[in-house]
Image (cartoon, rainbow, N blue to C red):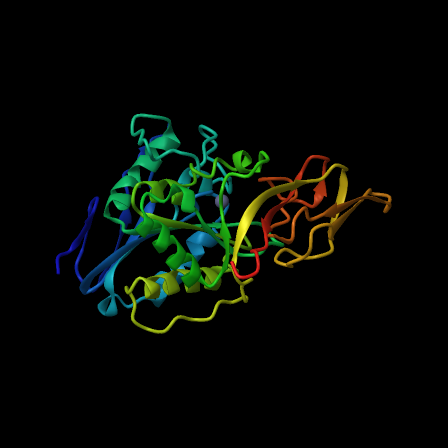
Length: 342
Ligand SMILES: [Zn+2]
């Protein structure tokens, strides 16, 4: 077995190596780079690239990867884990979804095509490409603010081959999380967070690296790290990198593969009161929340448009996610229930 080479890192079989990818430089001379940890096994096998803090305020992914690395013994591994614990350190430092410097975020199409001479976020994104070139599989780990329901996103339309599509299914199933098939919705909700095809797991899948996007919960803390660790390690088990038995997830998933429907936007300003927490599978027309004004009168009943569930009550989209909301806030992503037998 050869050592695993990534940038300046050379990681011997059965060991863990830590370093940084290529850096960018800020005005005061500070250098900023994505931290990377490589756990290299003792036999050849798949190379799983996993990434946290693609959105800089979603540190749950960072926590999930640190918890995973603490639990791994590379002397028992077949293949390799590359963990980019902070994909966007510019945004991470500011507890921000996007980089403050150029208002770009890492789930935009910033890697393909690579722009190493482009804006600063594009330059950082280009620093990740050597890891994608080594990877056979990819997990992009995000998190929503609470209350939310954890999901694994399949991106079948972007899969470059049937094998990539099947590997997406294998990974998403292994995570133990509720599966949602992501295709561009009829409404604008896809473009509010970036097009589906531009999501890193979709773009990687279009380039032959089977990618799945995880949307965990408790975005800004380490609280859900264990959920993420189980998802990552169960993925490594499904790929044959680890030999031991899969672990049960922290929360039971909704069975079957749901279909992304779109977003729900409130028509009236006020306070958002959830009646069915995210992850409750309800029929179309069910009132999932009420909005009251600040005098306590109900001004709106928010219904789910299809049979299925909402996976997050985002409130004010990307910011402090307060549930004191102006009209026209994004109060949930909706996934449609699978047809019976599907
Ligand atoms: Zn995100």
